[in-house]
Image (cartoon, rainbow, N blue to C red; front, side, top):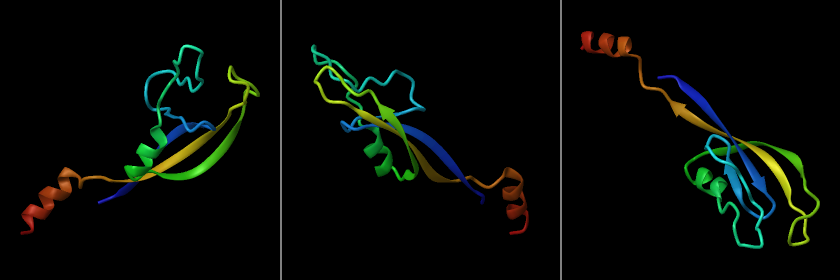
Length: 98
């Protein structure tokens, strides 16, 4: 079997919200006056599924928001080992040799 690595990028906001970039959709971590905003916390879920952080890159911040405090963002690279199934030819050879 051959081990391969898979990668994912996640944007993390200083307010705790996070967004997996492989997911379709827009990331809106800001609370509005109407209470809307993206309520996704995807980084903890990915970590529980075995994804490991490899690198974090600061992305800066917006300096201010509707609540008066600024948010900062980071781009986090996650990595996970993926074990590929043996190739069909290898399976055939294994069956022939038994």
